[in-house]
Length: 210
Image 1: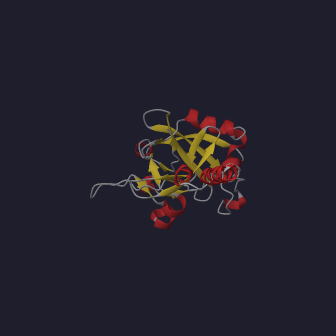
Image 2: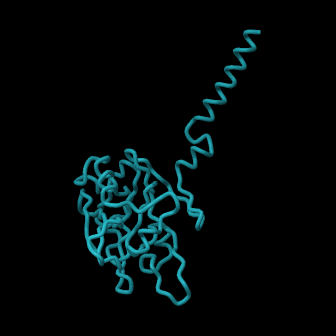
Image 3: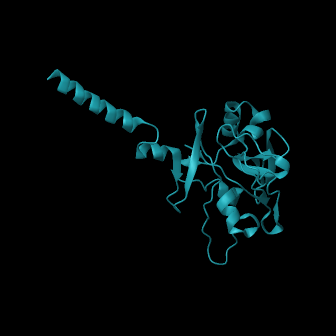
């Protein structure tokens, strides 16, 4: 009787441990990705410190009325750029474009990320993707799986700039009524820096979990 009882307990324990193994349950899988119900896009996510970030640039295309000017762009209007590097958003759209349960981070939340990866002076190198797409071999080590990409930026109808050179990410932090701060990582620098640009420029978006 004791032998049968022990066998039953062992079987139950095995099932429990198997279910708790990494990647074994749908709940675990859900915690590793962001599912955007608006368009069905699925994004990798990463936990760094006590923050959970998107590990890819947002690709959501903001609907616009017929005849209206777009407020998000693919680099040089090429759809393949959106698929690989995400869309570029004006600041006004960026502050509200993240999926439900996520938000565009402010500068204090970016600062918290920088501290978690060893400081702003090394954050660029550690957060940049390790892909060879970076200009002049300027890729990073991507030690934390953040995978920052050099998606460049747009000045709207005034053209596109700095593809493969810089990754630019909007923050919610204002400089004044017309300008806002963004985080930039560079092909030729180890640091990540804050830069102020017009809100009409279109940059990349990384969302942070609420």
